[in-house]
Length: 443
Image 1: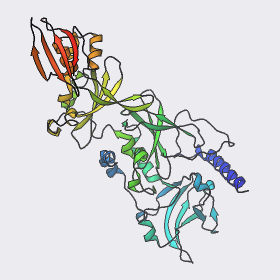
Image 2: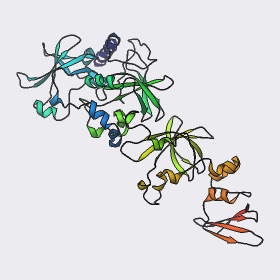
Image 3: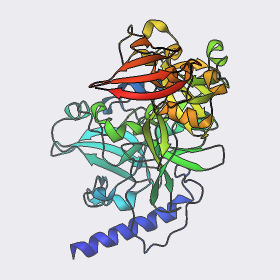
Image 4: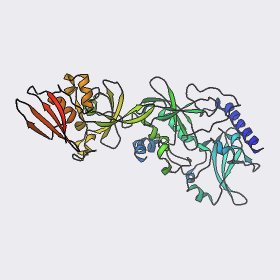
């Protein structure tokens, strides 16, 4: 019996959504969302660090204020956005009758805050006027007084704050941004909550096409489009008003549900300085093997890029409040895109300590094709693997193995370059013509 009642309630919720979607300007969908029938079950809308939050600190603090429930003012507007669990336990009561009202019935309705009052049995009622049906409703605080409850950052369940959405529309629609994570979503149902996770490259340039309501935890739904017109979205908490989540809960996967975890405004600290601009579209090559980020199998991957890999610098993006920048690099052979955080400031480099010095652009990269220009593809492949073969020049051996630990002379103009290995010596033998004639290992 209970299961039948719950199924009926959820079906009613879907019908309510279908009836309201077209009329409600806060409900926005990505391109391609399909109409659904009421026989389908409703899916719960899912909204899913300190450094990323700091990147957007100025934009957020200047435009979006956090309102503790203690600071709520008459007229603040919220929308009822219940999830599946909220369909079981009602949040609101009808102020005229005192009876509970199912969250499915109130889904997507706009509630206007009207202060609080104490009931005859000394319970606190947080009062609302519904814009859609002009009726009064209240949320009863479970325990204690109003001040005790509001300072605990609990808020009112199911309510998404619309003030952030109104501001975000005026500030963000039409703005260009960069993606800061790889996990986003598309709508699969026009009049339901069906969504699908999609993977988007990090640092992709996008344009904000629409802003609407997300979830209670992540109220602002930001829909963006890439350069090909593909739309996707992220639900984010901007001011965190009534989010119901503590600051220390925005970690791990929830990091993307902060504005700075998913987006970065191009206009906010994104202009490439005149010094950096001189490097854009220049050809460089790695002097040492190094880790870089790239995309493979639909996921971000960290890969070891060998020495002498030739790139074109496609873009340089400064990282806010640091001396580091993110290089977008295109491999000139494979055409694959890589990303590397480096600094042009030598003071940031902690001497020659391994793991620090390679962050310095001047240590890791050399301008131009360098010594690759006169090196064959086959030889270059061996160099990248740290191998040498007969016919290699001194320069090619040095590129593959580095400078020798010591050298030794032999008869007839022959000489050896000797490299220390963990349990042996690698001896590269040169002829009088300064070309490799042999390679051997001595233990």
